[in-house]
Length: 289
Image 1 (cartoon, rainbow, N blue to C red):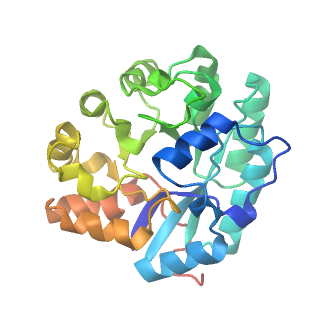
Image 2 (tube, one colour; image 1 turned 60 degrees about the horizontal axis):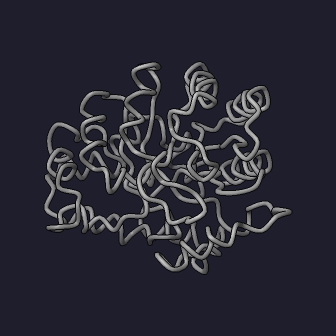
């Protein structure tokens, strides 16, 4: 069964926030991707897509503004508990006002809920990947055996700089915490050579191509050549399929992975094998949805 390493918590399970998103965040994403409307998809749509694609999914408690982390973590855990044969979950911590003791308590709760990882998107909160304030979060995740999913590469929020998401910063974190299991979300474009170098140095750095139409990986001039060459050989064990649903349809993304000319072993590893090895498969695969 395919394992989609990152889908967003469906709209009808997301907690309401007291403050609206920054206008420059919404306007940037609407202009670049037109994703604001598609982000309204609900649980029914997600389950239907997974059924059609014969897939499982890792549901992420991602947030780009505000302070909904606690409610998001509970909502993800509840949804996973309802569909243990189809879903796994990843929590998050509060970065709007990063208070280390609170973040550590949130990580304890994430582990207590049975979630498999923690998602952080520091650039949306004016922090870089290697910001020292995040190190206690990384260290606690390592202690709890949680996978850290971290956003890399371009973001379209014109309210924040994107320099803090350069993949080279992952190298610094992994030099300091070499056993940490990290997943670089969105796979680092436009710094794909940097991400390829970091992944080559650190075997526990995984690459998630969520939100990218896979056909661009091997499309001439798209900027992915440093990675597309290596993921078909020496980085094969470090690649994860991720749709970033509802940004990209799950079955379409999986079909594109199969059609872009990669070796069969690479496609199998990306669509399923690597995610299983990382512990992202649902614990009750085969049970009723």
